Amino acid sequence: MPLEREIAALEATGEQLVLDCSKELDQLERYANIGLAIAEMRFIVDRLDAMGPWPAGEIGIEVVNEITVLQTALSVVYGRLFVNGVIKLDHNDIPPELRSYHDKIIALRHERFAHHGGHESVEIGLEFEFDGAVLTVFQRANMKFVMGKLEGIDDLLSWLSAHMRERSAKVLMRMSDKSGVDWQLALPPGTI
Image 1 (tube, rainbow, N blue to C red):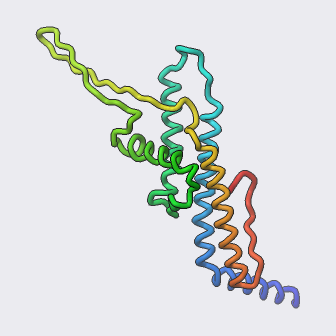
Image 2 (image 1 turned 90 degrees about the horizontal axis):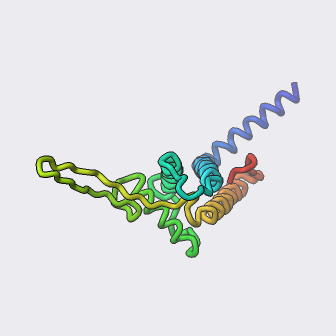
């Protein structure tokens, strides 16, 4: 019986600690969403990095479509972290030497992949052919894109992982100070 009372007292104490730190725990839960996004982006980058090289003339529409799909997913997942995501990260936190890469990925997201805003990498146009009786309209699309992973993405993901580890550590320290109990975050291998 005494052991059961001790266990019940520990459970009640643990429940109270969780209640007392609910705001911080909500924050850590939002950070877990960012960790998931980082893992998704690392997978996409690895896939893009493993593609090619292709012999001249062997780049078919399947390759173009696969690269486009992967880059679309990458830019959308990345962009969600900075635009109306579960938690919106601040552009100003990005180190100055990485901001141009960030800006390029966000521009791809906004202007090419998430919206049709006329990104410089896509030229849409019409051509006409008239044979004297029939005017035929041809829709043309000229796309330019990076063959593989986007420039700077490895450095951005490394920074983002370190940034989120630091933010999580600050939240845990605040929880420890607040509760008098040492809070630790268990991370599975390969996460932030």
